Image (cartoon, rainbow, N blue to C red):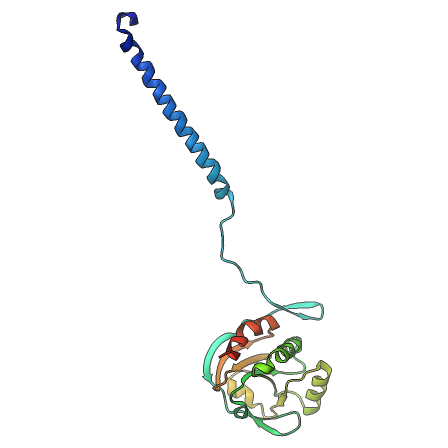
Length: 211
């Protein structure tokens, strides 16, 4: 067996120097890995970012909260409607060209219609100076019932009566409540079925007032 002392001094210590250098490199690598890991682990454990979910708008109706519907974009000419206003005079949509019209089909016995009336009134009060006209279209109730409802709810926007129910055929829809928005050029731009909140009215209709 060869005695290590038989080798020259330098030859005997070369292996030792090699392993010392290797251990130093391994130790440095471990420190780097630990440093990176400590910085990345909190990011890995954090919840993944997601797209913000819009907060739904609600309508307060007695003790209930009703979720607001969202309007759909449409585009077709407003129908030629001739109805009766609250004074008994004949009126037509064409007479209001140049304004943005929010046409609301409703009835006194419709819970969703009743729930959204304060929202429509508040929006009308806020935006009528900008060229908005809200018009309630009723094909179900008598003139006396409509007038009593207007006074009870404190509504200032006009309520038109349609004794012959032309509005249902004109819009091919008899769902209550339903609403349509006519722009200043006479095109229907928005439509929805169901009660709507003031927040959603502001979000979707106000930009049309600025066109």
